[in-house]
Length: 304
Image 1 (cartoon, rainbow, N blue to C red):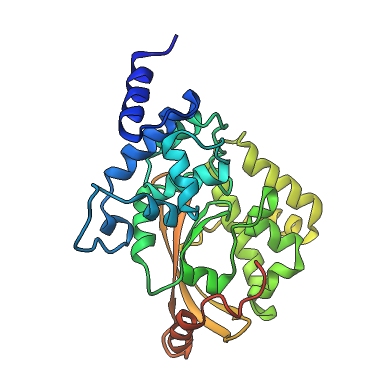
Image 2 (image 1 turned 90 degrees about the horizontal axis):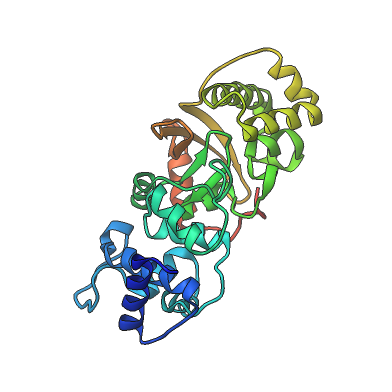
């Protein structure tokens, strides 16, 4: 027997859309609509414009923010679409600035398992998403403490490559750093030893913050120790240092080497950090970052 809340949700969806979809997804559509209507365009970096007929965001704006087609998102709100993928649910949670509780509710309505805390579809805190949205003139991204990229702004994609296509262990840049030689093209070869040492010291600090039995960190460390003698040697040295800010050199396929400051803002539990990059003083990197905004991703390599 359905709950009174479920019945109310279905009746509200039918009244507003005039369409009866699968009962399993009617509530999902009603929930998406309610979250859409509470957000102002300026809250997500959009221009409100003089004529708006609906409260909050329009459907096409949510679709744009989530990287979905307008027709597909319309179907979701009507409760008439197919089961959304986990990737789409993560994108919608970010676009709609859902809290962690709301994100979990969305996944349950879609009959999808809740994503792991640190995986590529982990929930990004709405506050970090808001900050990322407002950082339009500098490369910025949100990563986990295990260096899994969760979301990037366009300039970060142009500078570092699109990180959204990696899955499993490869989603962690630390894992790719020690197992995939292509990942090291991001930094000049002269900097590789220092970067390796810094990655391992930061990973040790992250693992210590987590529960000792945390499967994600434990598996990552065990796999790296088995696959990379370099990692295994550095791990045995027990160095610990959280990467709070760095001055680093980054290789770009079109602009050459950029020297930048990499700054970090941490979430309360330390599991996520917002990174943003500013040009190092006394270098030509400010001009190169300006050019980056012009060329975008046109001349970048495949995901790095």
